[in-house]
Amino acid sequence: MGKKDKRDAASKALRELQVDLSRLQKHVIKSGKKVLLLFEGRDASGKDGTIKRIVEHLSPRDTRVVALGKPSDRDQRSWYFQRWVPNLPAGGEIVLFNRSWYNRAGVERVMGFCSDEDYEEFLTTAPLFEQLLAHCGVTIVKYYLDISRSEQKRRLKERRDDPLKQWKLSPIDDAATKHWDDYSTARNEMLARTHTPFAPWTMVRADDKSEARLNVIRDLLTRFEFGGKDRARDLPDPNVVFPYDKAALTNGQIAS
Picture: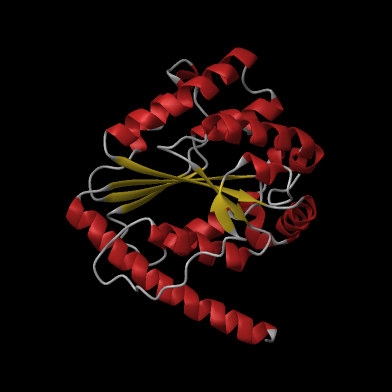
């Protein structure tokens, strides 16, 4: 299959999946479900593009994308999870966090923006916080988009060279490749200590953007039963989207 045929097939598959997403949203609204999707991953792992495809044809009234900026002085003096709480979904809403409280286990840890004590407290309390949310009826789905070192380097260069992607540039980007091993260590610790039955991590191999996006949507759709759902819909490719397991850190499924 040529490149054009692949693009056409991917576009067709995306449209069909987005139709089912629309049906899913109707179900969420009617049933009053509270759906929270967390997207984490290294810089340039494809979080923005994946989220864009999910929300593209959903109702903006009942869908919110949350991407919080740098914490204020008051945020830094508050309970760590406090600034995310007002952004949690109400009944009938789907909320997508483009990065989340897991900043503390990633960039803050690697770049020294938090103390060792704050980091340890986070890893201890994050599962408790998520257990409370789940107990109170919030459906939490956590995706970690994983890319290879070479692919991150290529994407960051593309970002610097493309005038339409300048808004994505940040000082943190310059440190992303330099601290590759540090980010890997932080990622592994985060996954091991915050993967729980009520809020498990789902891994996404994201070197191929199109495949990653399609398979994340397929995975999301499998998590809900709703009217009009296409029962013949392809299941997510287990080589692209799969539940976190510590064995993936050594068997090549997760970039080292």
